[in-house]
Length: 126
Picture 1 (tube, one colour):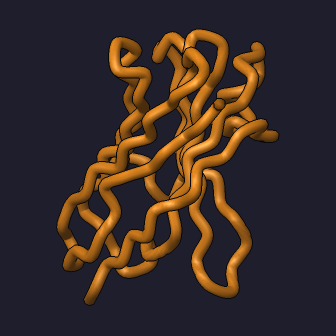
Picture 2 (picture 1 turned 90 degrees about the vertical axis):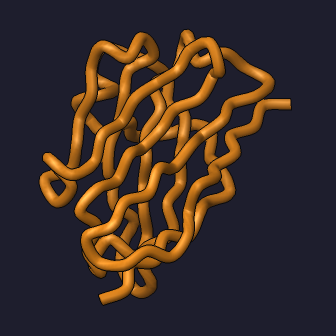
């Protein structure tokens, strides 16, 4: 069974850091790009970051550029999102998703994804 499971969310103060993990099971990341998305209450879903299957290409939303870093550990079949200098406006449910690793997948921020994780809450207090 194909699954994506996020972990690492939580409550942190402004300026703090968190690392989210997205563990894939039932399939290999060799053929999929992985994206991180977030959705805050009352707001539309936002693409945060995307990484190609080989980890060689990445993309970030302007709102997180320079603060967030996406990476992949293929041995562990896991993608990470390191989040630093967190702000209250980063508060949201964060989802990882798998998208077929095409030529333009990373450019288009892993849209459209094929498989989704269940989400992890990130709350940044002021």
